[in-house]
Length: 194
Image 1 (cartoon, rainbow, N blue to C red):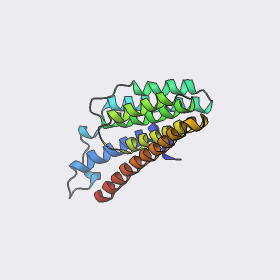
Image 2 (image 1 turned 60 degrees about the horizontal axis):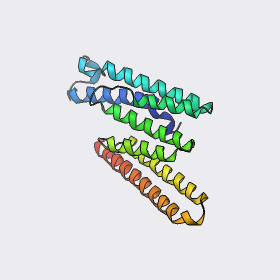
Image 3 (image 1 turned 90 degrees about the vertical axis):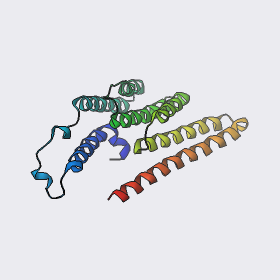
Image 4 (image 1 turned 90 degrees about the horizontal axis):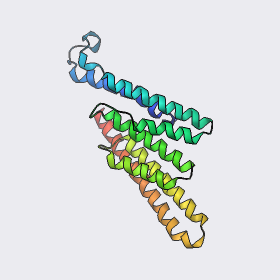
């Protein structure tokens, strides 16, 4: 299964694992094994967050089913519902879920010929992001794909649009490079934390 297919369902599992690990490891005493420590109420993920994540997962799964049936309009509507979900204030998972939804929404819009709306969707997500993450890097990747789609459209218009098509391909490479840089930085941080 690829990372793209994990998306929100995988995000829920990751969020639970990370939150549990961080909560447990931050208060764990060096001499006491984690199996002997009594659970603390602060170790539990906020119920509102869990409900919001579950809703996002269900809307995402619905979108995937609609996509498999070729009903892109219904898939698009389902993904848009993710963006309207309410999350607890300051939950980093909320940003990740929304960025992931924007990436999928942009891809759906491109597949329906709505390239400019797809680019607006990506740009809004990038403007709202608060920290670098895999999901921000992925949004830059989708941005690159949109630039490629624009270039393909311009190629179809013939010689007068050739220069603009070249600009779009260069913008695609810049977006991919930005995504690569973010992922390399994150990977370096993860290796240093080990």
